[in-house]
Image 1 (cartoon, rainbow, N blue to C red):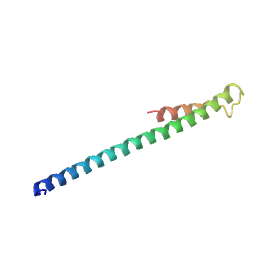
Image 2 (image 1 turned 180 degrees about the vertical axis):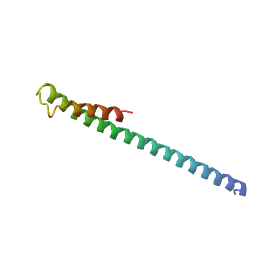
Image 3 (image 1 turned 30 degrees about the vertical axis):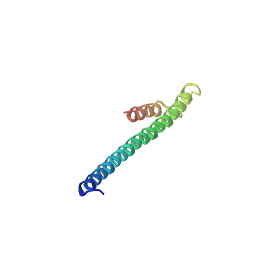
Image 4 (image 1 turned 120 degrees about the horizontal axis):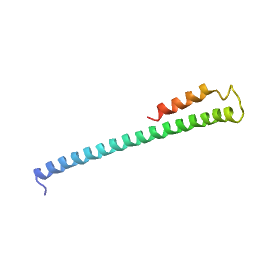
Length: 85
């Protein structure tokens, strides 16, 4: 037969375990969200770098002044520079 004190300690330990579990779950969700945001931003940067590559190829190999405009290229460079921080 358990006394009233043992029920009290079981109750307190249950609350502590529930709180620790909740804190761990919240921490894991926060870390996962940070990882998801980093991955999404990385893919955005890769897409912009691919567009920059097309601009460089148009300027260098095709000698296309319209598609290979330095303004477009430097715009992409500055955008990637801002996103990398």
